[in-house]
Length: 398
Image: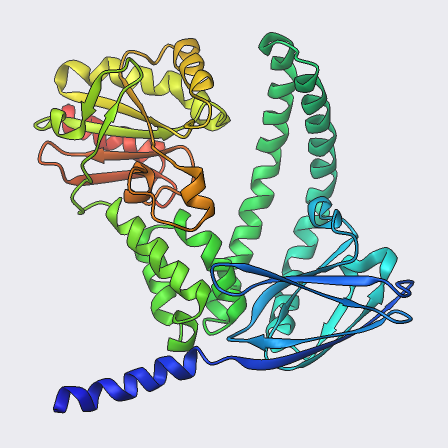
């Protein structure tokens, strides 16, 4: 009987947290006229798109929400892809809100009445000077990338594309410090606003690449309502996956057919140190790191180190095999991760996907496993850097 008394408040709390509440968004966009307006937003694991017809540039959206969520408003459906002036992005929530702006600069439209959007504007102000410095590099990268796409469509050879790829890589390297500064601004905002839905939205996309302990700290600071939101649940799921691929956890066993059509099981390597290298043929940093990985393998193979490359090339096995051959890394074992994109798009479990069991959110990421099958190192997304990996391997084998 006592147990039932304890459980009832918890159920009531969950019901309260998940309750739908009404919202109204009144818009006035000059230059819009009598046209349809579309608004897309998350309703959990799915996206919903509502539409309404404006009269003289004035329109109203009404509906219900469980909690604040990021929304995108646009007039031309193609604007959802270009990400330029044709789309406005903001946080809507259960409240009476007003949107005003100009059709020619829809991206700059102003939303009032949403406390979450007001917090987003604090973050936007912190981003602004960094994005201004990043703008010329972004424009140059887009220009070069369009040239690259055009040449690919013209079926140019890898050799003909090489110099342009190098140029794109050099531009991305120059952009990296600015992305790091934006990341710092995200963390500063999360530190100052632990109960904000904007923080939950930020962490949803950051947590997979931060150390497990740091991610757990941010999650613990969230109020229960935020932890029970869709972003909060996704953060918890990401952390649980990250934990499976972090030091101290037992390495998930898997069996695959390798690049030579031979069976391969992680258990085959019991008694050895195994480095799982999560990579892809299209991942430039992965490919750039292969010469160093080859040097490590040459140093420690005879002392008991094995490497298994786990590639994110399930939809292009030919590119995977070509990259292995070109980079000369066929000296160690290789398998595909096992991603089923149909299951992924349907938000269904993908039990054959090795990456899910190791919390892999970015490439390259390397997992070091000891002879007892316990993870003792994570390098890359959510872990340490390659320098730390080098030191650990040196300590083990020297």
